[in-house]
Image (cartoon, rainbow, N blue to C red; front, side):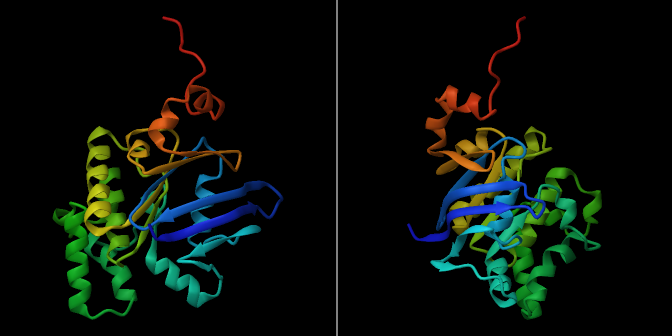
Length: 248
């Protein structure tokens, strides 16, 4: 499998000295699904920001398609066209008056002809199952609808990789099912690699080809998520399950 993103001993310290990540080795293959699991403060969001160049590492490096990521404007622009990011709160990236205009923003800024922009927007809306929302203001949508519209805006730029920061957060069961169905479609039919974070080995994490468990900024386990689920001691030590059940 061709590797699209690789990190080598990646580390990041915040300006005030807080260590967020240390010695993180991670691989994202073409068409793969990678879950990054850990409690709050374990470094998950920081890792995603490093993968797309929103932060510059203080140690190690990120390789994109075999080349070390540099932080000049041209390189970052190229990477961000090929690596889309869904933030935890989709309101942070939905800003246009209508869903259609929001999804069209990326391809329009790429300088594509109007016909190509229209085709990409139509396709993205259909893939994410939100074509019926095209004329609605994003702020009137449900949480699940907002996330699917935000992802539609990302895939309209034809990325190779999607980075999804806690994509199931705040969704009800129906919202979870719809989002997972849409992500499966993107991965299977479009071949888009998915990297997503979460707090537990939930259904989305178990769907991954490979999972990484982060604790205090370090990778403490890497492997098949189904096998990790059987390691109760590991999960308890990382704060991913309760140490004991409450008595009835």
